[in-house]
Image (cartoon, rainbow, N blue to C red; front, side):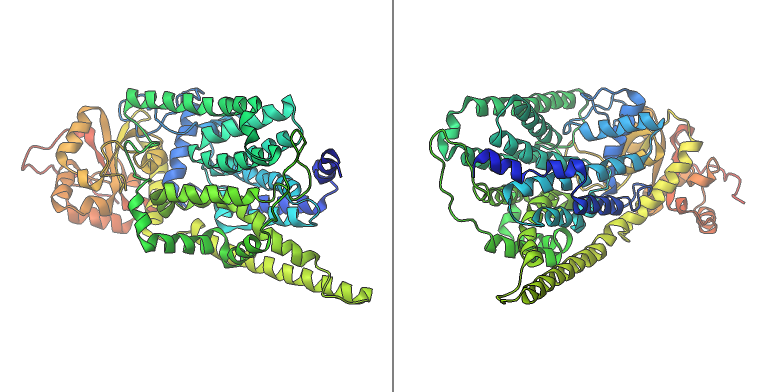
Length: 577
């Protein structure tokens, strides 16, 4: 069979374009439907701080100008807000949907993620068809498993760039493989575009270099690919935009001092390699992979696929001959998975703490999990001279595969539920902050600068990506300070810079008795009661207890009223009725 003839047979493009592959369309429809659950929910679920940071950049594009090269955050103080970050393609696209809608709506960002996540399943179908041609139902099952994994169900609809990153990752491999199969300017341009955007959106996706090199090795049968000028041109065109962008982003940091800590110069130490010496790190990662990422059923399928599908050593093509034969690139997913595993070891602290760092595992693990499942679904039973015996075996295999899929889907639904409703103190804080922010957005001046007080894991770093949630919910700019920074002097210094209000959780404010007395001397309130204020602790607590709204958990202090004289108690304002 010629390479060109195999490519034509393996390609499912005609099936998809003509709508003949009904199963794939049903799978995509089901995956999209699941991702529309909670589409209009506020950004208060798991990783709310990360979602609101992305949403703030999108909203600032919409309200302050569509300059994609100068993303802006809310925690800007008195600066212009330009921040050192990954290339902001996702929030820019979300802002474009705001233009179509006429206003900003978080559900549009969720919808964008859902679309990218679902489209990734279609690309994975194409990729599986080329890597494993001649295996019935494997491409459909790979797409289904990809859409059903719990971590992907959730992060496939969050206001975050992860869904776009995975989409571009699979697109990079697929377009590069197609260029290897059928060299041409169009295929080359698509491969360059997909890979360049992928590395721009998330710099850790450079681990895709491993499977890309593996495909080049397969195409030319060894190290001969290093002598191909087209590959060097590809590498230059793909890497140059990222080199330019991250140099430009460093310049933005020099202007404003605002950064997400991309290169670990400042901020959260995602590269803390001390964890590699701790057994708990490996235990936690394996537990999360088995519970949140793959489910126990999926983990067993992946291990089964890894062992059972280990490819035989393919014969390299003759010099100048095109690679052909269906099993030639079957070892590429092993290299892909190995690159992601190396990424975990290079960024251990980030992977330990942030669940969305494991989303890249899902597409490649879906390929491995689909291998044994497809064999079950298409098995013909053991022996038997009569067609009835063979049919019985086939029915039994399909039944077992269906039970396995139902078990995986059921566990996934149970596992992902805690992402939607975390039920922890942080979730309750975000919920209260969202309610308070809606009220304050209507009651305080639109140009008011806020000081927000929140917990921050980056508090020990000199320059850090600050917590954006309260600022985002209030639709205001300003500063965020941590509990360790709570002091009258700190509020006074920010007031001198133009801060108008201090907003924080009542529990945070009351955790330091002396600081709480300072706030009472200025006058405290909560959003639905503003502009009324209290300077008496007992009466304020009574007013809070009598109010049923979630905003009662948030305290507001007007910094524009001046600083109380030392030791002087301000008169009691009118009580809340």
